[in-house]
Length: 219
Image 1 (spheres, helix red, strand yellow):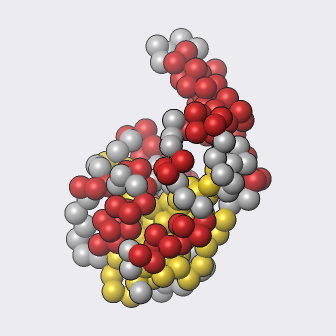
Image 2 (tube, rainbow, N blue to C red):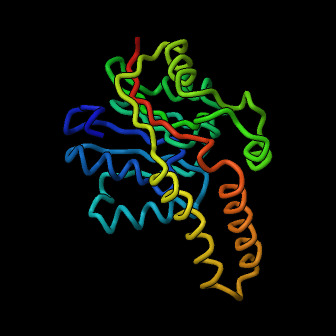
C-alpha cells in the first residue's frame, strides 16, 4: 500500500475482495480513507465484516455481494485492487480494461496475477487443468499491462515462503472447518476439496506457478 502512495482520505475499491484482507490493509494505511469491497461469496463477506469489526474499521468498509463485472460505483476511485481475482473478469486483459474503468485519472490500479516461473510441466498443467498459454512469464505479464495502457511503477513477486503460507492457510481453513463440523452435510465434501487442492499444489504446480502484484498507472 505504501507503493501506491495515495492521500490519507483515499477512496478505495477491492474487486473480488474475498475476506477483504487487502481492503483492510489499505484502510489501515490510509487512516481517513473509505473502501468498497465486492465479492459474490456471502461466506467470505461475512468473514470480512467480522475482521473489519475486530480491527475497528467497520465504519470505513462497505461490502457489496455482487459480481465484480456488474458493480456500478458512485464515482471513481484513487486505488482499485484486484489481487488474485482476475478470474472474476475472465482474465488479465479483461481485468485491466474493466477494473481500470473505476480508477480516476491520477489513480492506481493494483493487480495480482499468476505467471509461469519456469516452463510449465505436464504435472502442473494437469493439476491446474490449464494449457501453457493460460499464463505468460513475468516479462509477458508486464508487456500485457503496457499494451493495455498501464505502466508498472512497482511489482512485488511472491517468494516461495509466501506461496506456501497462502496455500497452507487456504487448505487449513477448509480442513479445520470440516474437522470442527463433522456432522455437517458438506463436511466430507469440503475435506475432499481441501485434500485434492493440496495434492494438486504439492505434486503439480508448486515452484512452477508464480504470483506478482503490479502497481499500475495510466501511460
